[in-house]
Length: 383
Image: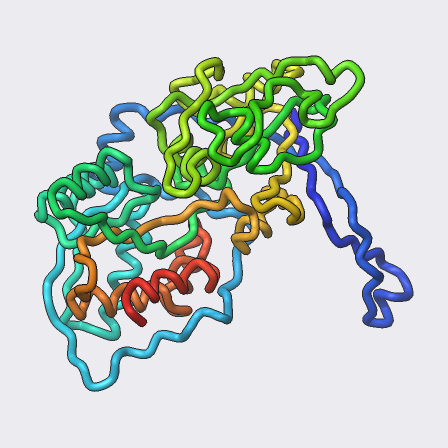
């Protein structure tokens, strides 16, 4: 079984006299296509596996053969001079982050041995967020965006939103470890890319990005037999971390929450999506890249009108140029205009440094942040 991937705007350098002379040929825009094997099918966690994850953290998968480099634009970590930090801080964590967080704590302690940071079971981002609201923990690491209901509950108690700072990228296609997401079609479908505006018009009832609803492949420019064929729209039933991510990234706009169309073929879980689309010539679906276990064709995406389409390749996800790359967050209760405790602020500054992201690379599962992703977090701290 093959999962066909299409890559837009790739540079191809042939081995010839120019290459030997140290020169590159002029860029030729267009598509380069090749096929990659579909991944083995994943199965939902058993109740025993879920409980083991809550107690000890999720079992770490085998790392990708390819591994990322560190963005040299990230600042080096230099401890704040003349300050000896101390304090004890307890937090929560998603089960998939336990190993990485432990490595961060150990490395930070080399600089600040009098700062004691810990996370305790049960390990689950949703449980940790509830504890943050109850003020029984000082911080929580969560491998996704916070649930809307948690944001509402937090604001109701404190009168402001929690501070969520990206401190790592997600993974490329590791099952359960915050894989990047993508849209895909049947291999016979001739469409080559989709824009955020088109996806919103296909999936959304609110259409905050403007334009009329799109219901047929002809409205996306396909001709011949495809022109009048209805798009069979597949998605994941709310609430789910995958659908919430797509909703926030594409359907939400200018502070307005997007809503799904009523006629979407919803699945309760992500596992069947690739198979559903592979079995329906006129289907469109989305899922995490770890769930591409059937012969579908992944689509390059256009985030901003007029920009080039970007395919979900490993390189594009690692460089965070692919728009549906995901993030891991450090969540904390930081009142507007007030600083974090000095030790916690220093810890976050370490996480967002070259040395902090080197720990992510050493862990081998998640992808280090690029400087463009880390800079807003430092601004949040007031740096």
